[in-house]
Image (cartoon, rainbow, N blue to C red; front, side, top):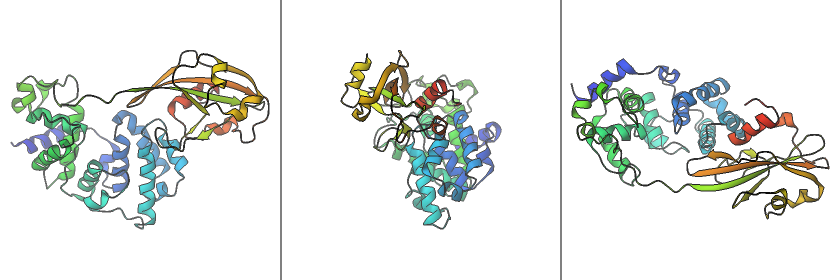
Length: 350
């Protein structure tokens, strides 16, 4: 039995049952792939179900407001995925008359659809022989074939893509791709894989050369940056507060937040907060009291950043002109760290 046949046999006996594996609808396959990028399946499944319930078709997603999409996405992180998802749905709906493109090259032209996602959609939905390459595939192939090219180097994708294309079952490209990803996800896992139960163990170079823990190779990590966020919960006598939308590029673009003072180090007193150069001076004269809500900063970890977050409660004497009532806050798409604060401070449900 050759390598590919062995993989497909393993998949037929071990594949997990997911709702997106019961369809070839390109909208649903695309949605599942975007949600599951950089997201564990257990975490992504509830989001997929919520999206399909709220936006049953591509047209429903295209006609939604971006804020609605971001709110539904809240908690998944990497919000550019949601913005690109929405933008591409709008383009297909309005410019392509709702018809999903059926070629690999056409799929690559859309926002948020790279080689991996285009390969998945093309192979699963349209039986186009394009092999997928993701983290699971890198790991499985690098271990079995002993490939020591760093997976985050410039030529890695081309090399691993070529190897996956050699192995691809052109008659069942969609099944092959799902089998390849499934094997890396459940069998050839990053740490402590159960090699004794692996059907490929006999010919696996990493196993036979005791390199399981060394492959795949990845060059040194990007330096983690520490940032200090001070959120200002400015409350007027009616309990309304100030919210603003992040419009600049970077983390949490288009999400709502409380006014933010970002400092180089931990701010230790209300005086230092109100004297900071980023403090909104328009509120300074009518603030009655400033209190720190959490003495210990909340550590919120992102891919290349550690955010140390403090929340300051500011009592504002006047009624806020554009203040948000507390019952309105629940409808805004906000970062998870703010949602968790609101759940405690305003007794909102997460």
